[in-house]
Length: 394
Image (cartoon, rainbow, N blue to C red; front, top):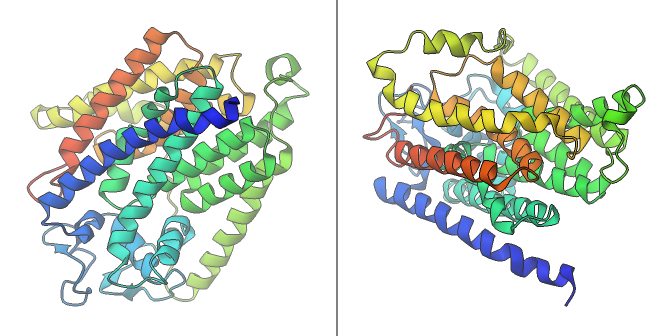
């Protein structure tokens, strides 16, 4: 039997394990809310009107809600031009509609956004996405000469717990990004471009990988010894350009559609000097921040373990540049007082850092797996009852 024939047998047990841990989490969260899948989207009466929302949508009182309620709206009507629909008001309509990937898939899978199907479909799409991501990461690990079981590490990151638990974009974006990395390593350039483009239309931060492909191509003649590796080639320039062109075209189209409907919101310029926000937060913590610190410490330790992978010469040049880009963005974000925010922002650097760390000593990978497992457990505990009787740290 060939290696190709054996591959599914080596990866399917890992996928089954991922299914077990996430089905357990989903089951616990459903049980906490009497089997109501709409509780995952966290519609709050600060944005959703309980008198106007469909009967199958639970609206939590006294909370503004979270991003999942916007994706629910788009899953019902992806090309809407209504500021208020299904009882939910868009706060930044063009911003949400630009992230069309996840709600677009849900709309298709729910037979055109059928009201009774959408809440369950939002949940199902994210679970299936994480299983697809597991298949990709397990295959990457096996091709790197490691056990396929190492593929569980990035999939178990706490940001994906939040993604499934609150109907967000991270699981699908993670699956597409992992698929793009795998396709590029297999030199399947067209599939890499397709996956990168789809990831960008799901979560625009995926464009950092596309930018890294272009930057590697530009820098290769300047730093040939550092970047030119025949056994680990950089994808062609068009693989990185295609996501920018297609995402940019969609973004312009969406913003022009909404320009005559609602006023444009202020720019989302949230980046500041590197690490300043983190140190400011650490310098101001008090007893109320204990829960967030318990989550932040293993998160920072995980990122610290992954960061040296940027310098590994045995890694693909575009992957190393992408990891560097994600780390720079992460360091400049003012999110450290909010566990949900920084765990979500860490999804891409954890994935890229893990890919590049497969060649590191087993003790390093073991510590990394331990910190990821701790963050996963803390994220599950914080999410299962949220926002009912639970409050997220930060």
